[in-house]
Amino acid sequence: MAMSGLTKLTKLMAAFAAVISIMFAATTPSQAQSGTVRINVVKAGFIVGAGGGSGTLTFRGHTYPLTIGGLSLGTLGVSSASLVGTASNLHRASDIAGTYGAAGAGLAFVGGGQVATLQNQRGVVLTLRGAQVGFQATLGVGGMTIALR
Image 1 (cartoon, rainbow, N blue to C red):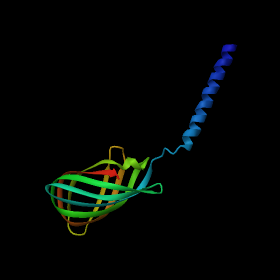
Image 2: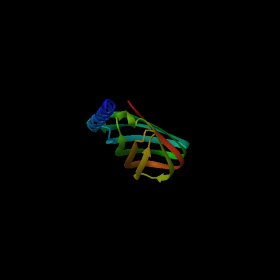
Image 3: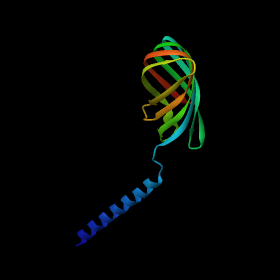
Image 4: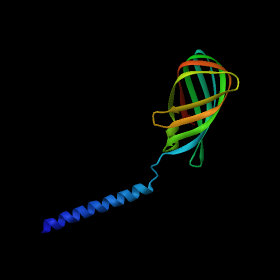
């Protein structure tokens, strides 16, 4: 009888601990959130292109300055772009830092529109749109690196 009571008490304690854990987990913000991104970049190149710029991330009521860098292969021309959009799947502002990859072909003339969806190694997805000024033809692989300043 004493063993049966001890087993019941152990099961009751385990159930109580599980309920408490669920309650604390429910009050902890573990859901990924989105932020607003603004990026200004300038790219130039002949065969190998390089670009850089700056931007901001607005996340949970704070604005964070960003540094943008990039490299692409198969580039010809000079262009600048002002892009705005969202950064999804953020748990903290520092998640935006990383290398975003993209592969494809594109051609833009003065006033051309740009739309891009990129993802980094932390799973953050940037969905950007905006205007590009200048001429640039790209065929190949490109990427963008973002760092918090």
